[in-house]
Length: 253
Image: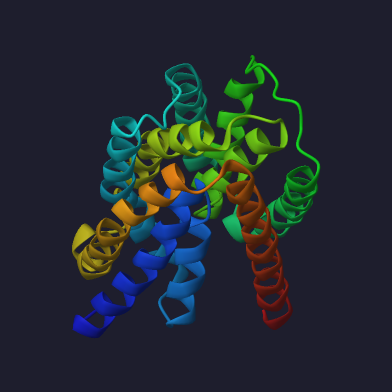
């Protein structure tokens, strides 16, 4: 763990936060893939990303609140469901390896991403946010805790498919993300000493903080349909990459 590692983590944090802050998804998956491609152990990757998101996610959430990108009702429901799911996920994590679930999550995200692209071409009729938000938050928090990423991809993508406003959806999901990260990070840091992750976490925080203002500005300025289209393409590409990595890892074991 040296200066080179910190710089690599900062680069990964910057690009991941651009996606996470502007699209409400992709931070965990993007940073995980980048860091693992740098040769960093998956265990350290998961722990450092969740801890770093306490800072980058919190900062981004505050910016979204200030720019009016947060639906308070949606935010509260996602917060409650997400925290409950994260608690369940971290409890089961010690018994069920996250890599076992990643291929299934990737297939689900590929389908959802494809639907979003279709809905971008054929705009959906907006629907009223109802009780499914709690269950969606629980699923997102659960999968994020177990797989090290996927909160935004699962929650944001599903909300967009149902016709919710992209700007308010992205802002609300980002704001609730902090609390999901908090629960997951606390659980992981009880197993892995913080000292071993400090350099990686600092790098991720620096990159994420630098990218956060740019990401929230994009969310406020870019037309909703454009955000939906980009989000769909990003989800499809990330899900395919995750699926390929999972299959390759399984075949080489």
